[in-house]
Length: 132
Image (cartoon, rainbow, N blue to C red; front, side, top):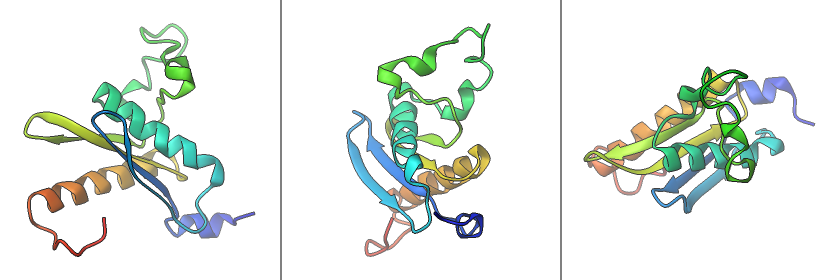
């Protein structure tokens, strides 16, 4: 079992998919929760598939919300927990980053940093030898 302290040091599961929801990258940092592996992948799947951050669904999916039950779609893969962020290039969604192990706000922050890293790479701001 991993300690809370280990998780506080930034351990994270990170998944990246392309616009067709095809997995491009997955990494699990030491100490990241094993049960969060599929959650990170599903967050990327949802953000790319709906072209909207997973944090945007919070109010809509509660009982009585206009999208109640949406999280049960796509064989349960549709995720409404913050941490999935689409990647937009030239007005087109080209994929998404999904992160999980922290709180939804922490996952969201890491996913946004991942999108920024991808954008920096695409714009030539990151050396080609840098690891994403």
